[in-house]
Length: 80
Image (cartoon, rainbow, N blue to C red; front, side, top):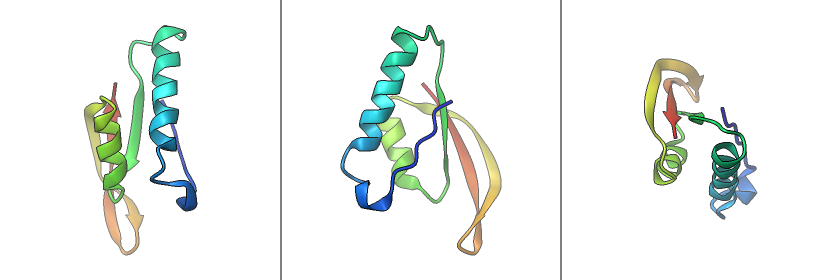
């Protein structure tokens, strides 16, 4: 499973996509992994767009899993 957190001042500069692509290459080429999972919080739709752009597909969803800014949000799980 991949986890990633980028400070707001460094977001939208391609660092997240670059880091995930590196993890995918390493995992599949050197780590002999069959699949790589990641997840994002439902309020972070930009993360979901990036992950799908990188080839991840939906694997599952935990509905109303997190409380954030006065509302419940899903945790969305993806797999590559």
